[in-house]
Image (cartoon, rainbow, N blue to C red; front, side):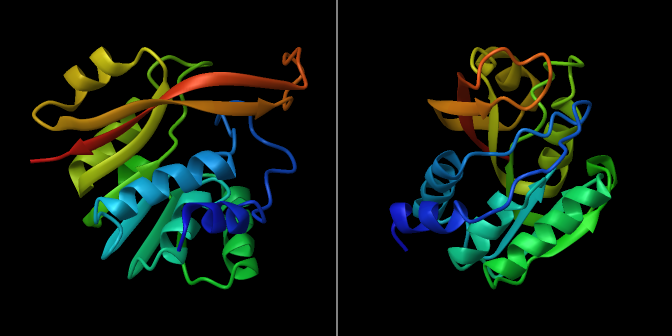
Length: 196
């Protein structure tokens, strides 16, 4: 499937009606999700098993399944997010398992983790449990972080290594009261991490 076709399908995914600020529920934009998924697909990382940690709307897990991943699981500790993700998977006619769980409790081993963890904008270090869970349970990780995180990520993941990284745009619609603009575009870094 071409990247543009995938993006068009992912645009059908419904977002949060009432996102939780403390959980930093900013949905991954379809364009960015399709870009990451297509890159992972081209690297051969989506063939067998994929997990989406902090899956939210389910966009990364659903996208992986659309690209032919055999087994796809999404984890989120918010039961409302799990319901939304299940509805989105149903809408796009793909079979994805969604589990209501804290990422620290994830134990099943998979080939690849895809994730858009909290950036820690509200509470510093919120991305760390996600990175730790991914390092413990997968061979390859694709993760989205604030721009300027490279040195921290590189140090935190050792002995795992960043094989690829690039800067991307992440549009955020006005979601919470403190947002001043209708749409803000922030720069993020996408990392592909290989776990030894």
